[in-house]
Image 1 (cartoon, rainbow, N blue to C red):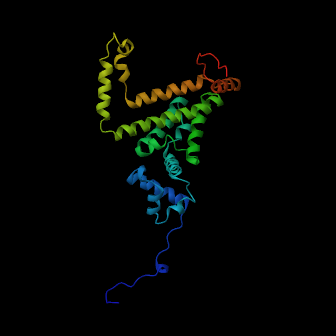
Image 2 (image 1 turned 120 degrees about the horizontal axis):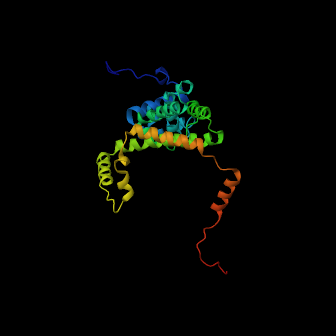
Image 3 (image 1 turned 90 degrees about the vertical axis):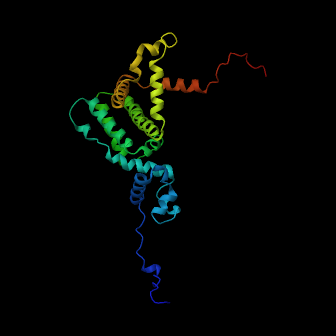
Length: 253
């Protein structure tokens, strides 16, 4: 061996890689998402970052969808739940919690769309659901209605963030909004009387004002709209199973 040529190191002399853990995998996935975007957070890319094989990750995470749900669960730790024990009207405090959740998704646009189908089930998500249910309970919302209402409220917040993230990725989004606004304002009273009647109200308000109004509407609906009784649910299920009446004569086969 010539002078100056480095002596090969034995594998035994190399520093041992840290043992894989679920927490370490999720932390690395979150870091990748923030630096490269959620679309790059795949099992293969994550394995490369952790200097291991994809098969090793499947012991901890079943697939990419579950990995994305784990990322969302981790980020939900940033949701501000302090309004639950704060002062003021319960509706205002509930909107503050929902607004904080929406803001977390706004700060991570690539995750917002995935959040429509991701199903986290960790402590941060359960704490968010508990916070919303606690405030609905404080407001006198019956438990059955609150149970359905929490789902709708989170859907509204998630869909709002996902819509915004889609617009952010669309370079023509602002032009499309301007075109729609112009079309609505120029609608003829003869052909579109109701559009003309409400005029600028269709496009009025800031995004925050409109989102707050949506939250208040859904909260009020949750408070006043009872869930169906078991008998009503059974009748609805039976009607879905019955073939549609086409109006034709019955078959004589």
